Length: 424
Image (cartoon, rainbow, N blue to C red):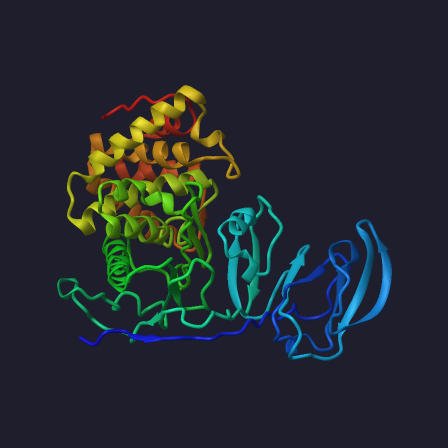
């Protein structure tokens, strides 16, 4: 089987402005920006003087007006100077639409922390989910290694290669960049960002990602074509313990891999962290949306452990993992004992939403078995794919499927404090 071609790319940034005139409440900031501004010729926008340093720019001031933050100058691009310094474009305020590809971002402060915000149109931190549609190509420095997958192939894991049969339905190619900065991405593609990873690790990651998708499709049904099209995974060596996806933007912290890394299973640790959890959201969290984020994370964290054990053929992994979660839950409980549902998304929810939340279904296994739970999730996906449900509907569906009322069981786990397993 031929090796993937190693190529080098020099890409450019093209960010198209919204269609039509910008409202006065929308502000376009200019800083450090790229050379390619042809698409802005003739476009009008505001630059707030309080946020703009005095310097020569290839823009003409159209008018000025007073603003709370200083004098707001209305600019129009008159010409492009190819020798001009590179700049970055940033919008603030609500903009409904950019031309190009769709990316949904929640908690933009986390995006900024991830280390590549300078390449995106930066969004002010908000607990609300903002949707942006834009076209973005990224300029990469010379000598950044980029691996382009050769297309739809069937490759066996035994040969040390990766499989593309399950990727081909939703992506056109795979782009891998050995840099924590940013990578060219677009609708219908999946990209992993990895700092100084070896080619072998890259191949294993791709292979195991395919295995996660394949396993999920066998259990729950085929991945929806627009629920996993683009993935960006940004390791943060000194980052907090978090990860998230929204729409086509997936981000994880490197500390997720701690358990595996400590056991000297580097590839599996990175694969599990970067591929399993966020990929499973294509079924639960994105495929089936939940009104309560904590419910989506509880389900996904449980499935992360179970599916990882299946693809790696490690039967003891769930028991080991949930024992580890139990230790973390009991330790956190000494500091703050709150109900899972009482945490908001902007708080440090990992131990409660993820560890304790996943324990709900681990505990439930003790009375009805794992297969019954997985079959229930499959029925949930089949019935509610592309729809949103809430906790109340979830409990009704569970009662119908299991032919048993688990309402008080779920309430005791999600709505009450403490840690008291019923069946484990």
